[in-house]
Length: 295
Image 1 (cartoon, rainbow, N blue to C red):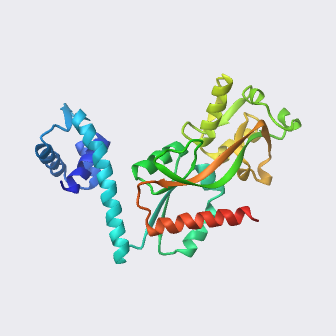
Image 2: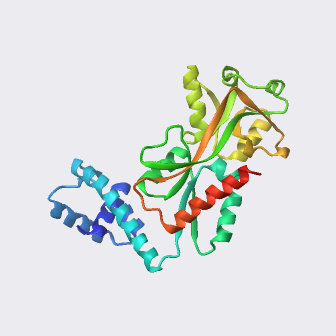
């Protein structure tokens, strides 16, 4: 079985449209339609339900989709390994980093890595930790910084940081007079939170569930400067990592009465090929993190 028809099949399955898949692949639609038809004939199964202008995977198509994703991932990794052995590839790092860490902790590390390895391509993908973990497992990225209480069994992880999540309020808020904030008091307030899927939000959702409380989310945004501005003006409170708070933010932080600590890891697939470029990035991040912690 050839790889190219499987790539076409995956593209159509993801887009659920022959037209959009053809546009994404920069090929003519008749070519992709013919390729799928030949693949169905070769396998002697129907891969898509076709009704009007809509399509959907058949049961057989769903089975092939899962296998094809793994085959393509292995083919790409094999090609990369051979390119590296023959010296044809300069190397690419595809790493996922949650926005809070990407904005406030990793920029110096990323710039130092680019300075050390100027010929390597560095592609940084921002997203929620859950989405990044899914992308890592599916092979869309090679490494990811994750905040996982129970990391997936499909991943290898290496601890990087242990950070405390802090209640963040304006200087005029009554919480300023307290040394720590009980969870039940926190949930009495209007909250400014990240959207679902981000570790910041997942931790708060878990705490609320444990307390049997429905949180009052007054604002939901992934923009950290906006969160800070809303909290500073007294329109709500939030939780942020200490690394995010700067002296001129006009904000005050307090720990929870029962401290909330986050284990921040860097992860990669157990069965995936870690290229020389990715291995270099992994070791660089580990050493830089250890150096920062020893200061």
